[in-house]
Amino acid sequence: MRTTDFPQVRSLRLFESMSESNFETLMQAAYLQTFPSQLELIHEGDPADFLYIVIEGCVELYARSNGRESTMGMVRPIGTFILAAVLKDAVYLMSARTCQKSKILLIPSENVREAFEKDEAFARSIVLELASCYRGVVKEHKDIKLRTAVERLANRLLRYHADQGGNGSLELPYDKRTIASLLGMTPENLSRAFNTLKPYGVEVDGAVVKLSDLKPLETLAKPNPLIDERDA
Amino acid sequence: MRTTDFPQVRSLRLFESMSESNFETLMQAAYLQTFPSQLELIHEGDPADFLYIVIEGCVELYARSNGRESTMGMVRPIGTFILAAVLKDAVYLMSARTCQKSKILLIPSENVREAFEKDEAFARSIVLELASCYRGVVKEHKDIKLRTAVERLANRLLRYHADQGGNGSLELPYDKRTIASLLGMTPENLSRAFNTLKPYGVEVDGAVVKLSDLKPLETLAKPNPLIDERDA
DNA sequence: ACGAAGTCTTGATAATTATCAAGGAATGGG
DNA sequence: CCCATTCCTTGATAATTATCAAGACTTCGT
Figure 1 (spheres, each protein chain N blue to C red):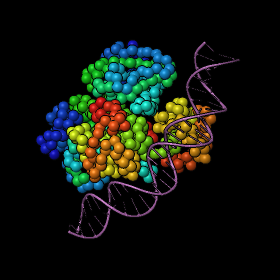
Figure 2: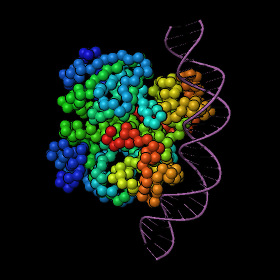
Figure 3: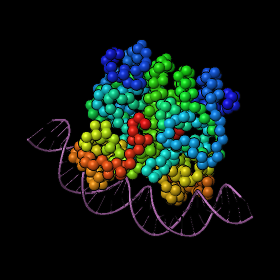
Figure 4: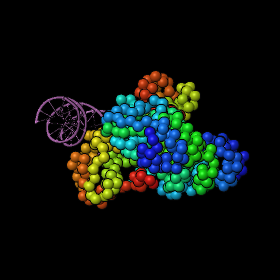
């Protein structure tokens, strides 16, 4: 890996203020690999050998316990995952698998920790990154503890809608079963939740959702920036 | 506040490797206050003016949305809370109130951020602290997404039991309604969950719980270190 | 010590969510 | 392009969880 190969990686909040030489060292230790869809990249409980950066494609973070499985998050380019485990030199709490053919940059954990020791700016960037990740999970936790399934869906639709320009139409970014699991419900329940939202102007056609009237949907959803906004 | 007033604060992971002079500066800017029970210390949505450290007593972190409320966590001495919001200079995602008469140390946010800028060791300690906090919430999120109410209670009891020496008896550390909310259920449902666990050797008398036979309880609970262990 | 307020439990019922089963729609590999 | 597979939806039903109500038990302040 050469430093100039992925300017988008360099411009991530995590790396942008790092010294050139330390970034170079990190990149030289890194591997760029392409994986097919549905490949398990990491398995919860394994030691954190690498920090992962999604360059192309898409990765699903999920967890299992008992016989159950739940999607914990999705990572899109350019996004990192499993930073906390790497820094703590601990085991992964979540598994990860590709959900498309994906190009992934792997940085050995020890190199990340070495850079963390050596590069002060990197250490500071990590703080802000981790603080954001922490607040992200807190919001998801509030979402699931304070809302019913229909409310979670309504708010998620409003979020996707805003993300995609807010012109009355949105495309679901993942399979419905994945969205169901993300939102903490079964696929059947998601399907029924969409039906419940029909009187609120939600029209589903495959992955395309049309919102014909935001007012009543928002009245139902009661969106809350302290749960739904990405940077609040 | 003098530096020597609270050696336990100094010995927190967060502060122990900080330089003496920076720690002193931080402590001189800090306020030590005693609050009565049930006082709201912070309100979600407000700007993060202080980092809080519980010296004595107990603090409940909770969140509201719609008309609902849920306990997000409990902080016991010597514990900090609301670090991420302070570092990001963002609004609080959670409210906090004392659940006993409590002695709290308040450090103004700007002083914390100043120390974060000036003191490298402090910045590095923050990384490890935030990484732990992050992993803590991920575990709670897994707990609620992957387990039923009875399973969550069973695992919580096993955790308290282990924490308290594992001699067959444990004391519930909080009111039952608080534990119910922490575990994401109503008080009525907690009461019934205790009844469900009776055949598994769980005997409740007020705040004291006796576990007469761990085997069947563990079989039901299926404890998972990647959810239940504090430092995994 | 006493009354008031809050907590906990139980019962009855309702709402929410999950499970099982089956048919139809969409998708991808050959 | 077609078949096979997976995904999605719907129906029927069950399990889980919440709500409402009432009574017993605690706790706390006066």
